[in-house]
Amino acid sequence: MTSVLAPVGEAPGSARTRPARGGRRRPSRARWWVVLAFLSPFVIGFCVFVLYPVAATLYYSLTDFQAGSYRPVQFVGLRNYRALFSQSDTFWVAVRNTLWMVVVMVPLRTGWAMLTAWVIIRVKRGRAVYRTLFFLPSMVPVVAAALSFIVLLNPVGPLNRLLGWAGINGPGWFSDPAWSKPSLVLMALWASGNVMVIFSAAMLDVPRELYEAAELDGANALQKFRSVTLPAISPVIFFALLTGMIYTFQYFTEAFVASSSANATSSSNDLIGYPANSLLFYSTELYRQGFAYFKTGYASAMAWLLFLVIFAATVVFIRASRRFVHHAGGGR
Amino acid sequence: MSTIDVTKRQSHVGRRLLYALAEHAPAVAVALCFLLPLTIGVLTAFMTQHQAGTGSLWPSPWEFGNFRKVFSVMPFGRDLLNTMLYAGLSTVGVVVSSVPVAYALARLRWRGREGVFLVVLAAMMIPAQVTSLPLYVMYAHIGWVGTLKPLIVPSFFGDAFSIFLLRQFFLTIPDEFTEAARVDGAGELRILWRVLIPMAKPAIAAVGLFAFLYAWNDFYNPLLYTGNSDTGQTLAVALSQLAKNGHQNAYELQMAASLMFLLPVLVLFFLAQKVFVEGIALTGVKG
Image (cartoon, rainbow over all chains, first blue to last red; front, side, top):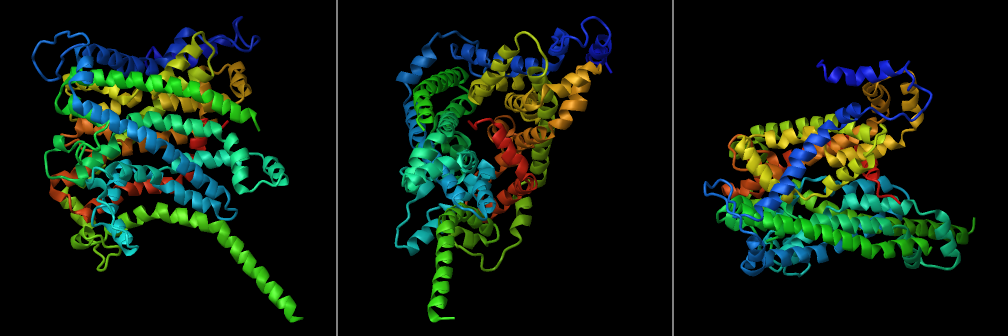
């Protein structure tokens, strides 16, 4: 079509068949403009949708910029960062809640995915059916999942009725500050099928001979799991914990929907964190500051801090677990 | 036959049953845990408002009118159309723009290739929160907030995760195929179109599926850009606002709407289960 696009497809081929550079030397270098043409979507996209915004966020974070306001923007240095640490109490509530999720939810979810994978691979006939059933919930869109858990866990809802039959007085779940985060953990366990699939694939990859050798040594099922399965799947454990941690630092949709749908009596901005700020997480607080209060500079400082923390936590985690994963892998 | 033989056989059958039970009992127990929320959700969609609000476990008159009622309490059809536009167009965008980039990273030889690949990996790691504030300002500046454009247009500029997946797959295709075409005088675009894409269909299908589901389920971006819009709402956000719009106790409507929102995903899942499992394996965490 255009004069720019046409040569990309045709010229290199037709021009290169005869001339000296042709077929003899096999791995010939591609021409720079061919490479650039193929890369161009990413090059443009990366500059416009990644590089520029990341830099702009850093700049905003050093100003008192408020999106939508006509006030001239002033450079304020590190004031936004100082305000995070000294002036805001909701910031620390959000940090504490987020860390709680990282420390409690991520290991539980990984462990549950591992357990369910182990349950599945021990089934010989009908494994595919179970795998489909276990995996299915992870396909449910987060919003739909959150809504159905609000129904399931509402104080006079089906689960509390079931618990009542067993003589247990069920808690208020999403409307009780002490139980709202555990409710989200339950939801995360329910939707852990995508991690489970990776675990079960890794477990099935463990050579049979290793199990047979362990059986000869008189190992029972639990011992076999500990000394054969666990070392072999340690890379997957590492992967699940790492991606789970990164995801949970940015935890947003589940908390936002749970807070706004479990109680709908006040205006939407007050709903973030309901009940009693127990579901106020780093990303929901950032959203409120940046997109409800339009304190763009302040929210940008939060965003950059999040970026740095995720980066640092990833580096530390990879360093710390390198030994564990490697050691476990080498020790079989 | 002696009686001993018969009792022996009976105990044999009994033992087999016991084994089967031991084999399946844990899996069945876990399956019930996974199915409970789903079942309750589906059943609630067929309850009357009174039943749904009082924690009933089984709809006693089956109320099929809830699904129709959803259309009267929210503009479900329009939101569905928006969601389909977002998911459909962004899937096209992701595939069309990511395949050539992955090709350049996997099949062309040029200096700086490893560096650009590292940039792709880095782009995957950047949290949405770090980019959304300036992007919002930018979209507001050009009048895109409230429309579907901020959701769709960026997907036409390469998606890092998809580029990564496709590159990994392209690398598994032996060099001989592309080199043979190159010796025959085929241009790069022709090699990509005639040789690589036909061989990479499973990977492209997986990337397309992931992109579609991502957009269908996406909440954060639609909330930012069309959350307050009268015409640009997508289903994910609209469902979460049902409660806010005075239907917070209408669990049966929330579930009926959620079920309709979920249905296309389930259909896709059952049609393309193999693509999913292979796609997850493709993310390269094995070993």
